[in-house]
Image (cartoon, rainbow, N blue to C red):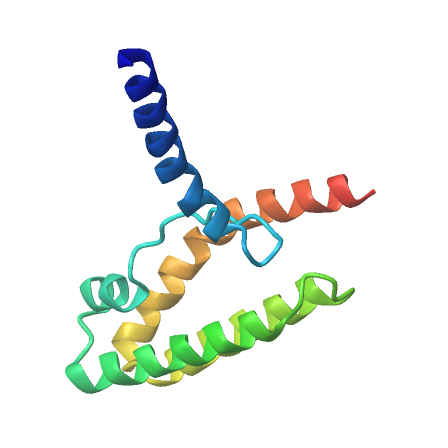
Length: 129
């Protein structure tokens, strides 16, 4: 009888662990893990001392970018080009909301960033060959 209780308790526990995993895959595909990214608005605010108005504009620009990026399907042959174009447009729009002093800091920060991005792009090109 004690063995039966342990068996039932184990099954209930295992079912409790399995149900969330099954729900996560209900759409037929496993959920992709994404790297946590710091909030871009907060990051730019700290870096460039954005005003409240600038923060609101940047937040709207970034939300628009996210909508555009979600619309680009993974099966799209021109996905990389479309993502790059969307990000360049976002950068252009954010830059347009900045003062000349902020633009200089923004540009300086952007020049430091591409090295890592170029390394990742090079790896992608090699893996596609």
